[in-house]
Image (cartoon, rainbow, N blue to C red; front, top):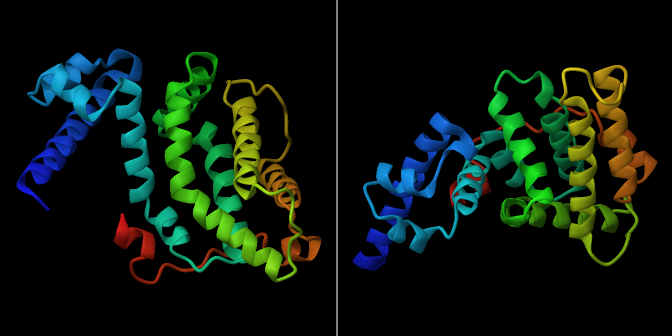
Length: 233
């Protein structure tokens, strides 16, 4: 790697570190690219050479946090299979549907930002979808392919990643109904609703009832050393 490239990569990390401090202190709305540049001790023009917008900076930070999550890294390092596919869906449902009761309100603010982006110019949503798709999409698609080959799922359409996004959007909307102090919809018992949502999604992506019965609710595979994803991140 050239000295120029190393300097560029180091500067990029310094910008991200400065941006994390700014976002943590002022939130997304209260942070400007000018304040991030000042915190990184660089010009705003130099910042724009690495990140074209504030949304791009924030999306990159969130993507790095996802990659650093040990549970997600372990899951993405598992052999593609029906069990991995079900575990991935369960994890997504658990994460979003439990945000309302999470002590860290930063997560709920991020979800609100994601929704707001759809109603605005869509830049932040597009960036984050791209990063999430590249991170999780390959494992989802490969696991669905294995499930179909094993006779535990039927093929639905020619774009497997669409199924991932349909599942993601379903969970996101379900979680949004629960965010207000008084939920928009009473789903009843939370644990039962989450299981029902998992079943709905798994049926929607083509899993058989036998596969759902076998794999849904099983304990996640234990973490045994660094995963493939963790090593390559």
